[in-house]
Length: 104
Image 1 (cartoon, rainbow, N blue to C red):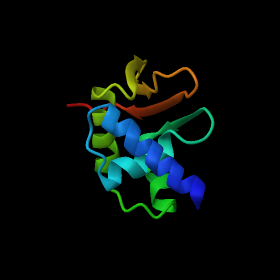
Image 2: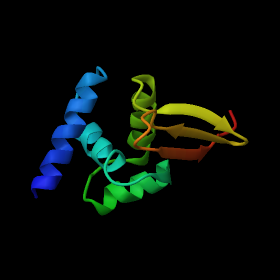
Image 3: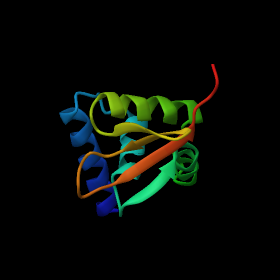
Image 4: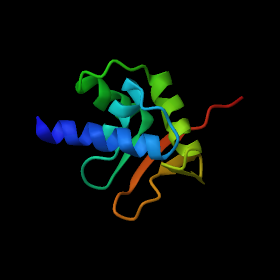
């Protein structure tokens, strides 16, 4: 339980340092994102992880939060062929989010 509390505190601190208000959903998603080893995950997979962790969050909120994290500098965005890629800029953690672009 202490590890979970530390992850929440770390996530809250990281969000505040980036100028974001640490809402319940942002803290929960940041805790899932910035804990553990390097990995590649889609927004849909992150949503499934959140649901599995009993975090009540919609897929739209996951997308919006990823965009907010990118705008705040917590994640980087790039293009890879037909997918948008978002990754953390810190060398010790590499997380890449991919999802298909929707035609406008």
